[in-house]
Length: 112
Length: 115
Image (cartoon, rainbow over all chains, first blue to last red; front, side, top):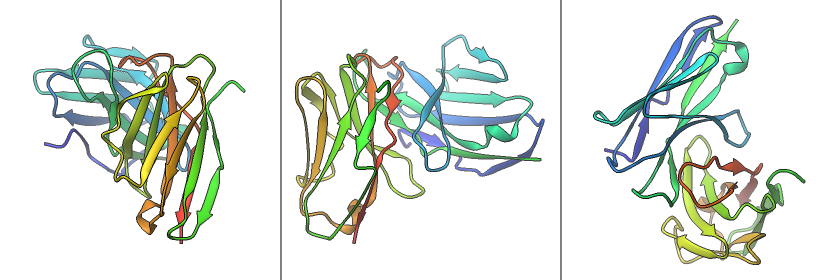
């Protein structure tokens, strides 16, 4: 299994749709999980951290399933401005320090 | 400035030349990371610094790549004898400390083209 694996998409959805992305990770010792967003030809920016209990930020909901080693991101009521690539990010090693591994991203295109 | 800055923003060089890429971090952010992103690909980790020391250099692709950080601030990534496969966007990121739960703030990147 790759360290972090995502469906590359693209996901083409109409405005107002609900869309979900999944991501799997290989290291069961990983403890930190994030979703970053990257617009075309721009740098990545943090969208949200993913907590064990799941968390919500407006239209965005993130879930973590440790047993299955997967993370999900749900976007409700999609906006044109949500069009971007969504990167699943996991820390590489156990412990509180170290680097992060970025997935290759899932591309979302929201159409009018 | 308030954010991470990188220079140059674009660099075109000839195969075999050396290049130096610079990252100016957010003041007081002690953890600094270098990544590269080839066209249509994900971010590839290269190296990270906590202060001036580099706990993990495992991502450097070959001994042509090196990085240093001085004064816990500016970092430079040097690529010697560049090859065409080195063409990519090189991104620098910063975090307040070397902790896995910290957000990483990215600079705009240096787009390197090796002819």
